[in-house]
View 1 (cartoon, one colour):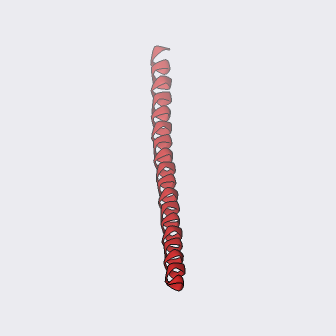
View 2: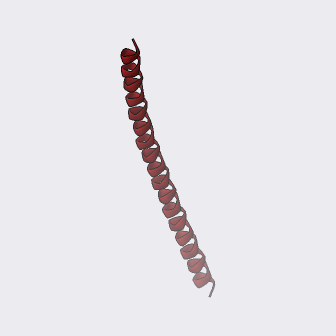
View 3: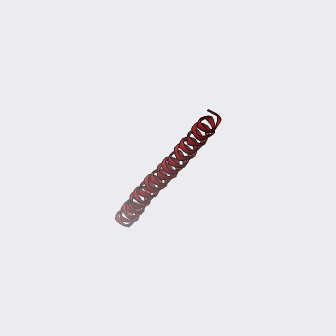
Length: 64
């Protein structure tokens, strides 16, 4: 009876370790996705700012 209880406890600990590892992996994946989305957004805003700068230069050239 005692060995069954020890085995049961060991199995529960293994399942807890597995669950922690899976959760850690999922959190890491979520962080990477957020980082990727932030980079895409930054690139988009950069292109938008570059277009606005070009438009401002053209408007200034027309005004002169």
